[in-house]
Amino acid sequence: MAPLTVLASSAIGCHFLAYAQTDARTVAATAPEMAAPTRSPSSPSGYFPLADVHRGLHGVAYTVFEGTQPEAMQVEILGVLRNALGPDRDMILARLQGSKPEYTGVVAGMSGSPVYIDGKLLGALSYRIGQFTKEPIAGITPIQQMLGVRDLGDNSASGELVAAVMPQTSGLPRDAMAARDTDIHPIDTPLSLSGFSPQALEPFRDRLKAAGLTAIDGVGGGSPTTKQPEPLVPGSAVSALLVTGDLEMAATCTVTYIDDKNLLACGHPITQSGAVSMPMTKAEVVATLASPFNAFKIVNTTELAGAFNQDRASAIRGTLGETATLIPVTIMINGGNASRTIHFGVIDDPQMTPLLVLLSTYEALLESNRYGAQMSYRIRGEIATNSGQKVNIDSLDAPTEQMPAAIAAAISVGDSFSRVYANRTRTLKIASVSLHIDANPGNNSLEIESAATTKPIARAGETVRIDAIVRPYHQAARHVEVPVALPASLPAGQVRVVLSGASELDRMLQSPTPPQQGLDEQAIITQLNSAHVNDALYATILAPGAQAALDGKTLGTLPISMVNVLEPLRNSHKMTLNGESAVLAATVPLEGMVSGQQVVTIEVE
Image (cartoon, rainbow, N blue to C red; front, side):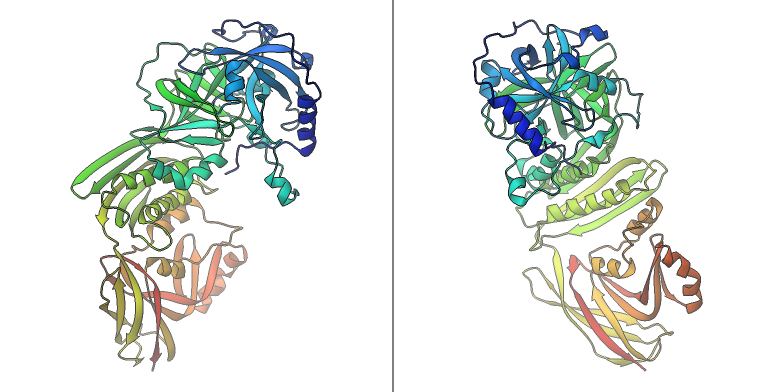
């Protein structure tokens, strides 16, 4: 996922310092404060021309510091940075003045705050400079650039490029990259979470931060059914719901522009995804927390106001009264004597949805953790598409030395979802996700320690007994008898039998796909549904003869004539071919997650 952080070049950084430092005189003239506007200009005469912006102008910006009423703060224009954010994308540099902005600094959630000069709309506060600046200096996105987002057609996939602003890091020495104090960044978007514990958030905080979202756990929340009689006006707080229902994630910024149909907010993207569908709610600012490192607004979301449908480089656009389309998720949890069902919806967004599903599943697993860290999880469920196809999920996850079971289980679900959802060939829509989780106390894992056969020499077609020793976690070792039927077609010579768990077996059966090709969505669904459950011990014969992997399916022990027919597909990277075939010979169900691998060699007469 590309981060939303926007970095200035070193030349721009020096340009900024020149603006900030060349004039140390106290500003004598200040713009008079005025009441917050209730609607935006309806004609070009109501917008301040970018061509007329110069150093020394004074204006007024509006944002909510507490409650729902926008408050005025004075703005001193420092200059215009031409093409600072990309070709033909200028940024206006300004210093905020007044007791509140000088105390709080530039605050996460302030992006989108409208700026007026002489009563005309100039643009939106949207960028901050560095991390530890002593003055509240911010970048303004000109309103002319934002109006281009308003004028895009519904669900438009064209128009303004979302990814026009990318970090300029290539070629920088390591020490320079570590100390870019003059970088220009989009003002962070505070992400309020309701129903999420700090423990669930911690493993994924950096990934959210990389997307420009400042996760605020334990404070903020709200509900889209809570009434808020105050109307949305320029300067109001507004939230985009990424997850809504029994769990909620809301990204909040400020309204810049509003008319009878649409509003524009933020002055920069949230998800970088272009056409989107996210519920849009009003919001109440509970408090604004000042911090030299990370100042942010604590927010409660309130009633639904419509839906955001465009997320572009210069603004996000919402349509009043519109209904967003979400992916419904149901997670049923059975933990000991208690059961609970969680219902929520997640946005359908290529960048964010896999992470949101992963994080929400992890939170649901922690909900069931009544017995401490030593828990194991059995997850069954399905991912349904709009065509009626389903991806089956069946996994047992136990703690390992590498990670707790809850994270491993969430990653397992997230990986299945991502492979269907995020692949480049996807045309199907995800209709729903449903999971049933059984949480069991203890570490339900087994490791294969050794294996041997009592008959190292056998004939083709004969059944050979292999004695495997498996060790459950903190328990005595167990002997497991595995009967292996040798195929009658095996030629004389040595043959290897691999005893393993499901992950090792699937790696043998599902040869890696060339990265330049990848699987299409139908092949991915086929491959996922053919995966083996991981609470069984498998005996696999590595037999002579080619094995092909094609469209998510495995074809074993192929004759030479068939290999010759398939060779063109191999040359075009649509197929992988191995010199020997993995033939599943025996499956022994066990009560635990099986890991490890042992190889037994048998001489075939």
